[in-house]
Length: 438
Image 1: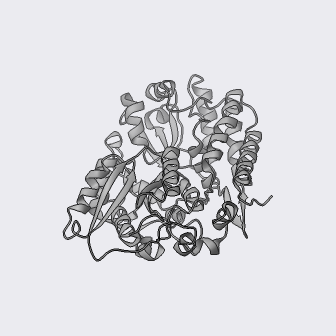
Image 2 (image 1 turned 45 degrees about the horizontal axis):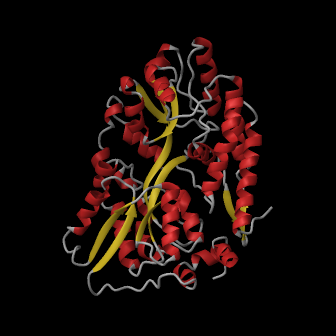
Image 3 (image 1 turned 90 degrees about the vertical axis):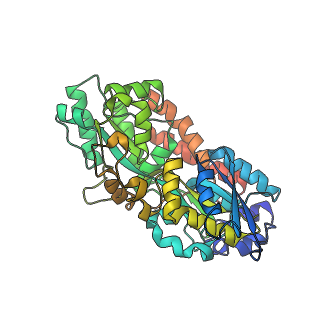
C-alpha cells in the first residue's frame, strides 16, 4: 500500500472499521489460526513482574497445552513504539504488545495493530466508557484491551490546609483563590507548581476541560491542540504562574522532592498512582496527605482527565489473532490476573470490577489513614473524560516541552506557546503524508 494512501486509512472511520481486512491488504500477517494444536505467543511489555502474571495463564488448568505466552521485557514509551514499527516492517512483530493509549493511533496508522472487536466484545462492559473509547479511536474497531489507567486527582497536605485555614477546592476558581490565600498567609510556600516538562499532565487537564486534540473530518485529520478548552487551561495556569502564586519549576527533581517533603509545596495535581511517588519523594510526610477529586471548571461538573495508562494489543503480524485476543482479555479482566498485576506490577487496573477488590480492598500504606482512598478513586475513575489521540503524540509532547519550558521560566504567554505546539504538530503530520484540515 502506498505511503500516502496508508496514512489516509486511519483518518476514515469506515476504512479503519474494516480492521483486519483492510490491514491484511497492506501485506500484514494473514491472521490465520492454528488452534487445533498448541499455540505459542510472544508478548512485549515493560510492566514489572509480568512474567509472574503470565505464569498464572501458562500454568492454568488446560491452558498450557493450548496457548503458551512468553514475555519479552522491553523499554517503554517511544523506544518501544519505534521497536514495534521496525519489527513490523520486517513482518516480525510479536503477537502481543503493551501500548500506551496515546500510542495506539501511531501503531494503527502504520497498520501494526489488528482489529480484535469480534474477539473481545464481551469485555467492553468491564471498563468505563471513556476508558474503552481510548482503544477504539472513535470507530467500531477495537485495537486493544485496556490494562491500567491514571485517573487524575487532587492531593493535599491535610495538616497544612488546616493550619492555614484553607478549604479543599472543588472548582478551579477556588483552586486559584486557595493559591492566593496561601501565598498571603505563608509567602514562602506555594500551593503547587506548573511543570512544563510534563506533557501528559497538561494533556489530562485539557482532556478534563473537554479538549479534543485530534479528530477526523471526512478523510482528513483535524488538529485542535489550541482549541478553546485547551486555551482555557493554558490561560489559567499561565495566569497563576505570572501572578507568582504557584511555582514554575519542573517536577521529579531533587528540588521538587524537597518542596513536598518539607511542606514548601502543599498540594499536587496528579493521578491515582501518586502514592508510590510520594512514598519516595516525601517520605517524612506519610500520613499527612489526603486525596480528593480534581477541581471542576463548573460546580455542576463531575469529570476527570487521565494521566498515564496502557493497553494490551494484538499485532497484524500475529498468525494467532484469536488466541492472542483471548489472552489479552484474560490478562485485563480475570480476577487473579489483575490481583497479580497489582502486586507484581503496581498498576491501577482499568477493569472497574478490580478497582475495589483484592489489592485495592485497603488504602495504600502512605494513605492508611484515608480508608476510603480506593473507593473514592474508583468513583473518580468512572468519570474519566474521553480522549482524542492522534498519530504523532510524541511530536506534540516534545513541542510542548520546548515551547512551555521557556514560557513557564519567563512567566510569559502560555497561549503563544500553545499555538507553537499546534503548528509543530500540524507541520509534522503533513510532512508524514497525513491530510490535515486547516
